[in-house]
Amino acid sequence: MGRIKNLALRAHANMERGVQYFEPRFLPLGLVAVAGFPLYYLVWHYLFPQPYENLPLRLFGSFLCLPVMLAKYWPERLRRYLPVYWHMAVLFALPFFFTFMLLKNNGNSVWLLSALTAAFMMVLLLDWLNLFIQFVLGTGFAWLAYVLTTEAPHIGVVSLEHVPVYLFVIAIGAVANYSAEVVKRERLRAMMAAASTVAHELRTPLLSIKAGAAGLKQHLPPLLQAYRMAREAGLPVEAVREAHLDSMRGVLERFEAEVDYSNIAIDMLLMNTKPFGFKEEAFADCSMAACVDIALRRYPFASERERGLVAWEEGEDFNFRGSELLMVHVLFNLLKNAVYHVAKAGKGRISIRLETLPEGGRLVFRDTGPGIPARVLPHVFTRFYSWSWGHDDGSGAGIGLAYCRSVMEAFGGSITCKSIEGEFSEFVLTFPAASA
Image (cartoon, rainbow, N blue to C red; front, top):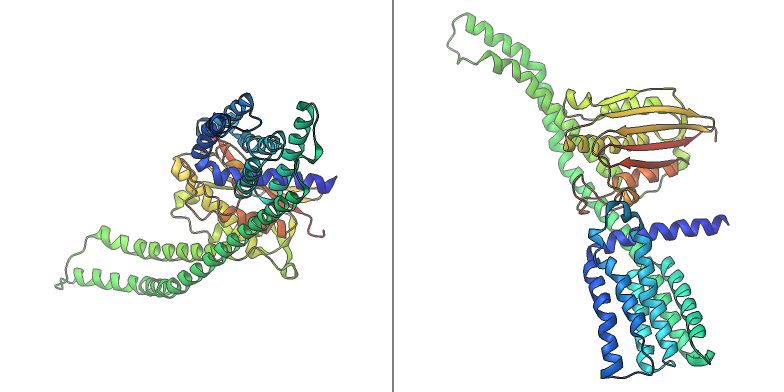
């Protein structure tokens, strides 16, 4: 039962991912289906007459695909059902309809080719797991409908010699979907190579800027004192406004802060683009409170005001088995997202608190910024899925929260997110006890 449940959860997750990738093309895909069902009735009933046609069934297919075509107009409360509806529409329009029509037309050549085309379309639209599920369910329901609607159903209406062809199409589809995972890994590897190049090219000039700023900061006070003494002695030195003199130290501090921010950003980019595999033998018992302290101390907040947005409600500390470095970078990612979205919305605060549990502990990271739309929430931990407050065009890297989930899974824990748009977003990081 546990394995079946895991497969069901994986199939549903793949449904959501499929909708994420295909939703921008739902309008043309739905338009082809809505228009194609009745159009081909005219083709096969009048132009090239076939033994069997069914206009009501085709009109039902058009009606079923119409909401897919208009997916972007779905109300927010219904969008959570879009993945399931999309796969139901595909189930009817491809494996069920084409298999049923193949059987009712006694397996003639026109519908053999049509069914083969439908199989190829399924390969393009579905991941391997849902491809298999839809193939079994669609053809099964089609055979059942054929038997119930035919006076003398003929089991051998489709020759057995055609079965290997269809099985080959399904098998090659599964392999093609596996290659899509390879493409994702190659994309991550390319990002890692690009990040390494950027880091190599930027580290040296950033180090030089920071060293120069530190040197100026060290020698600036005696230089300013000498300037003031020269002015008091009436020496011919160019006058500088006192406000400018006072701001010089602040400028140097901002130089150092910007360099620290840039280095942290490079560190995060490198960490997030590494292959998500972690060596457990390098793990040790870590204090969660210490990780939060380090993250808040090292994170390059742009200003004291920005730092003031974060409330650290320590609670009761607990230990977890993992890596302090990885945990700090998880917190960096959460801080980066929360600070950005709170600033973008112009409202909200951020709170971090710890809670002990009988079987371990958890960290609750909450911001009262713009929240996350319900349609986006299922995808926030999906690698390469990117969303920004106000639009979800997928233009970013989309690896930060996927990295967080991978780290938490490596620790034997989990990360979940709940949100109400316009009110809050809350990430809960749950850890097993360190002894576990």
